[in-house]
Length: 162
Image: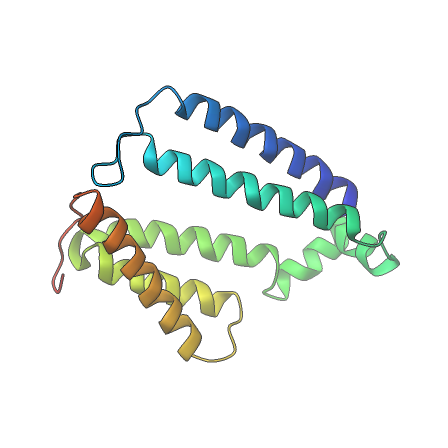
């Protein structure tokens, strides 16, 4: 993306996260032992705001567009990227994986299907080895368990193993 598009998208995301945080303030936060309905949206909005600010800073610090970058932004460049199996094709593959994830979750359960999804997404993003995707996947599942099951006391779809 060009720096101009990065700046514009960052500003939109910042505005969205600020409005989201203001809307979240309507709900009670309660305490750490018994979090209210605003706890998770507050964390989500805060993370979105921090990431958006980081993207905005990166856009201001990045150099201008190059000739290669302009070619990538063209229609012919995008078509070449898509048909080489990179770039935009990964978006369609990820969308397909998410649809499969929703259907498989009923039979495998949340934790097994999430574990597999994170590994597949890591490999889709060209992770070099298998160790990091497996560790990331285990970390995501552990985080979800601690946050939602242990702390907030929610239940997830149960499957074959969990």
